[in-house]
Amino acid sequence: MCNYLLRFLFLSILTKASVEEPSMILISGQPGNFTFSQTFDISWEECILKCLADDMCALLQNQCPAFNPLALGPNYLTQTISGRLFKTTVSSSNHIYNLTYSLFICPKNTKHFQRGETTVVCIGLFFFEQPLCNNQAEASALCKAHNGTLTGRANSDEYDYMQDISNSSKYTSNPDSYNYLTYWIDGMSTDTEFLFEDLTHNGSTNYPWSGGTPQSIPTGYCLHHSGPHDSNVLHSPCDLSICCEEKGYVCSRGALCQVPPLIETYY
Image (cartoon, rainbow, N blue to C red; front, side, top):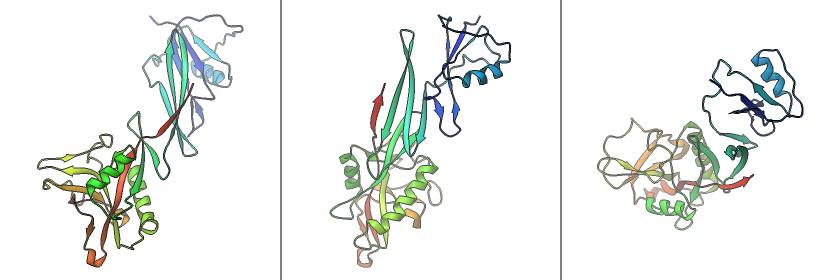
């Protein structure tokens, strides 16, 4: 037995930015009082298209369509518009449906990424002030000073971003003209595993290793990313700040951090 289905269109809100295709909120219930209604003897697909063309349409069907519209779906929609991330959430209270709009704003020189269905992080390179090259413990402290943690890549989009920002930093954040700059990322070794500060990037699953995931690394080694000249994740002693100083070779210049976005909420 199926209740009546009421379908209300929120055309100006629940719109997929990529294809400009409106979405519908499906609820079950009995029809109330409408000032005007009209009956159509047309197919369900034609009825949906007709309703989509009317901003004030509320659609009623007295039978459940064959494709089972009562299957549960997400109660939110995320959109990236002009580089800004928006999230629209639908909730109900006392038979009233409410829409909440959230705007995620990232700090300067960071970029938002969505991890999983609900987690939004802002990722960026943060640089040591003095000394310009420093160890992993100071990198972790640098992220925490910005209310964040060390992080690593969670997907290919984040990896491409890491490559881009590390490439440009060699020219914009290298006053002593080191040959190579490297950046601490999330991961510290023990005898049996890596420990991570940030649990949202799924450990080392998405790390590109040279020769595959290392099976054994001594305790006291930490992970770093060396920018576009080496696309792999590397490991070095956690207290390393400068390598081969007499040649001006490698400087541990900063940290890849994830920091929380500022969230503006509208009702």
